[in-house]
Image 1 (cartoon, rainbow, N blue to C red):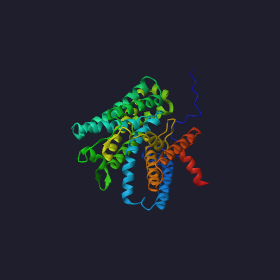
Image 2 (spheres, rainbow, N blue to C red):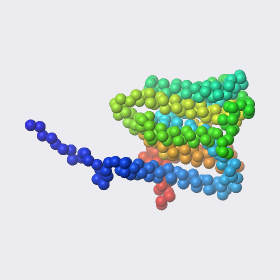
Image 3 (cartoon, rainbow, N blue to C red):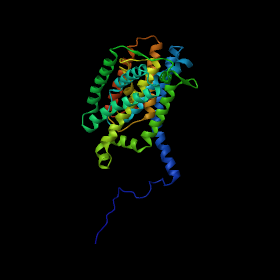
Length: 351
């Protein structure tokens, strides 16, 4: 006769005080939302404090014109930062986004000068960005080369190709083209890039939190082997994340070229630093396994506000990368010690 031994740690029924059904599900979702909102709210408070400081320091900061400019300036970094959130959450990194932005802006300008239609040029530009991401993803995911090494190499290669095409000169884009309107047009007083960034952030939130792909990304960053044993092609998922990053960088290249009116191989030099800083400040763990698109969006706004505020104060533009780099190293240091930037803010605020 077989004796069945019950596991005292196992609970077959519902958790005490909880039930099944729509009401219990709503309660669990609300509690999860509250947990997310704590860190997100803290970052929002920090951003608002910085805005208040700059608005007091310079009267032109809080004007409608300047805030609209900030929204447009932040848009390229925010778009790429959303995609980078997926990449970093999966335990990877993409250092080549700035070079991809530059190459795409150059190719767009060259094709427009050759007489191609704006819509076709934009499609080609996005395809070029996706191709850069595909190369990164293939070498990293399928050939086993760390993404840091792969994207560090492609960062140099892609930038070199852009410089080779232009010989170091910028290529002007006609202001009357549809292509140019992508960066300069407005809807309800707000620039098209800002609207596009809002849409991308919304899609990113749904993708990371609600879709299976986002669950795979988070799982891979936490324990890739477990996800692989569950039957998921983790290599394809990781490659897809890098393709998304490259495509987003392509979109940022289109916006940058359209807004500035030229394709420049020297654009986006510090872009990767800005994007990665926005992502990790927003609560995404640089070691993978945890990501927040909402936090990333707030991080992008914070970095953009700091850049704009320092510029309005008349400080040297060389201070901006110093501030950005300092923020990044502080956040990485906190992450390696098992905390997060929002934990540090919470301790300071509640002291």
